[in-house]
Length: 388
Image 1: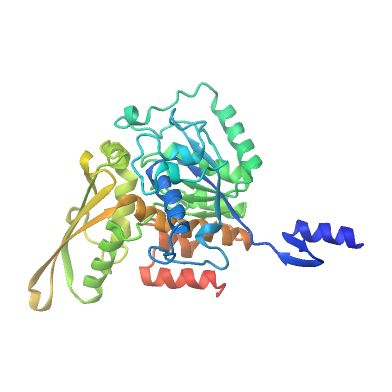
Image 2: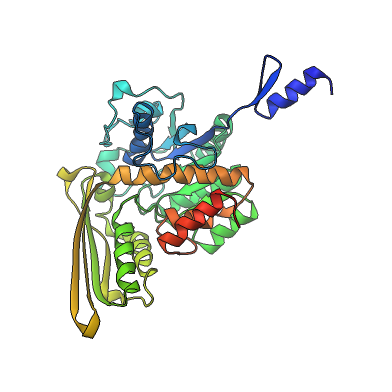
């Protein structure tokens, strides 16, 4: 191989040639987003916040995952059904109604080249949020939209798709899972529509050797992660839990959407199973209640969680634990998704497909295999370090 061809070869392998020396260029992560709502607004604005402040540690679980930092993520494609978002640049769409996140002022947010493309509505818009979202009426056939999406993913070289669809979007989730399978794109499923934890879908991702991380994201310090932790503490300290409930209220479109109780079936399963998995003996269904409770508009992106656990300890003496959590629901999400994206990329680099069990167990409420949070954290660290 002559010198010119050798240089071309090295450049094709992400090397840079400067002054007769070769330098390995750091790989970027090319991610696409399904649903340009509050969750993604918090993710994009949060990364920009860290870029413009000296505090790069607080709020970030893993500053580096191998050689990937949160600043190595490029959002190169976006998909939505809102009329006021389709055709907009991602950096503009995140400020459109009904989004509420405004951590970084619009005029301080750098423009992205990526724009928002049309997605199929399917079952992605509930009856309570129709007016707020103002969805496009898909004039194109589903096949036509699917073909355009695949072309967009190819053109933008999207390698990971993150689903921020609303709760209850089962058909839409399956549509996007199929898109990922057809385009060899990794999938991060942040909602409780079961794909990674469904044997048939998981098998499809295993067969095509495509990574998937799901289902239903745990908050960084969220209602379910707190409930799991306290329930496990009570279990591990030898007490008997008799009854417990978790009640959640909030004021964004996520909670408004969940007023349609028919859309909540998988959400309640996901949250309840997540807590029950930490107990040696599951509670009867009539003795545990875990789930969204109501929509309070003035709370906006604030989420309030009320937890009560009642049980018996030494000599069958009763005890009660009550706690309240107040948190920004979208900060809770973004702090987890930055890890999910980087772990999906690491899986792509290593050519590992199917459900990524450590990532699923650590980051998601309804993984294919439940673990305690300490076990899951250690498992993720071993995965990052490539320890088997």
